[in-house]
Structure formats: structure tokens, C-alpha cells
Image 1 (cartoon, rainbow, N blue to C red):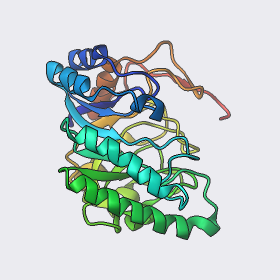
Image 2: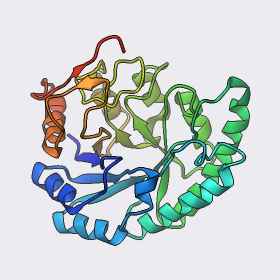
Image 3: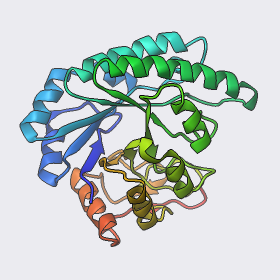
Length: 279
């Protein structure tokens, strides 16, 4: 149904073995997503070399967003420096063929009294980055976020995207805490050009495998199809289990491929963890 993609484990250095195992398992697209500390150590030419060697498409790059007290395009005191810092990643990554950059519009917490000011500053930052990316043949994809972050619902995302006509969106399936995903997808529509696929319990973001949580995956597939989504089915799930779930072992690229095939076939995946109770 869709090509299968995988975000790199966020707290692990990217190596050739990762690309090799993706190719052998059937993962065809990769998002580069590592911590800010590891991002500064990236060897872009090696990444390009490994991707080419194993036939992997470098689909997207997740721009750093942590720590919130240092990186935030919505905080007046941090926005200018953050924008300039992120430009460096866009420049280096676009040179190896990456043309989609996923961005968080804010950190958190954000008080209700500050939301309007933070929203306006985020829009200004996004407009600058959208222009910068467009000059390099790339797009900025604003991600929906949970809790008090900017982008917590379709109304927020539409406001953020209004900052520049070239802005698009990344739909994270486990971040909506106060809006049905069907309503959200209908309202954002063809602005969604990439996904972060994972499941959750509707209480908070969990980044579990599909069918470990409560999302109705068949309804989600139908809703994406009705809104003409043609991108990649890209998982954003760490290989090691988070504290919120128990799994028998560390995940592998093959687990994601098996999971995707099960979702597409409307079958229960063979390998699933057990969410902890009373989260």
C-alpha cells in the first residue's frame, strides 16, 4: 500500500549496519532523526554513501528540537538563533538529496496567556525557514505536537502553515490528544506530505508499534487514502522499548516491515509488546 520508512534511532549514532539491515528487511526510506548532540557529529557524505550503497531513499530529516531551553523557534529570546542554527542542517542535508525537513513549532510548556505571542513568533520563524528551504529545493513540514505545544490540533497547524504557502505538514499519529484523527486529516488534507507512525493509549504520546495501543488503523488508512496521501509509511519508534511498555527484545527493521504488512492486510502483527497498566 505504501513504501515503508523508518526514522533512525534518536539516541544512537548512525552507522552502515543500520542501512544494510533496513535494505535486507524491506525498509526503503529513511528519516535522519538523532539527538542534537549526535546531529552535530553527522557525517553527511557517509550517510549518502551508505544510502546509495543499499538503495535506501533519504526521505526526510527531523530538525533538532531539544533541549527546549536552547532550541525553540517560538520563543522570542531563542528564535533568531534557533532559525540560524537549523539553517545549517537544512543546508548540509539538502546537499545529499534530502528535501523534506520535519520541524517542531515550539517546545513546552506554554501558558495560555503566552500562546498568541509564541504563535506569531513561530510563524515568522517558519516563513524564514520555508524560504531558505525552497531555495534549496526542499520543504519544511510542520509536525503536530501534543499537550501545550504549538500544533496540538488542526486549528494550530492551519495557523502555522498560513505563515508561508510552501509550508507543509508531518502528521504524527500518536500526538493528537484532543481531536479525532479523522477530523484532523480532513482539515489538513493534502498539506500532509509525510508521517510519523506509532500507536498510543490516547492519554499521552507513547510511540508504540501499531496495535500496541488504541488507534483504529484501518480507519486511519482509509482516511489517508480519501485525502490522497501518497507519501511513505514512516515509523518513528525507538528500537529499545520505552518505560511504558514491555517487549521481549529490542526491535529490528524486520519488525517494522512485518508490522506494516500486517496493518496493510488488516491482520494482527505477530510481534507486539504489552503496555504497562495505570500509566
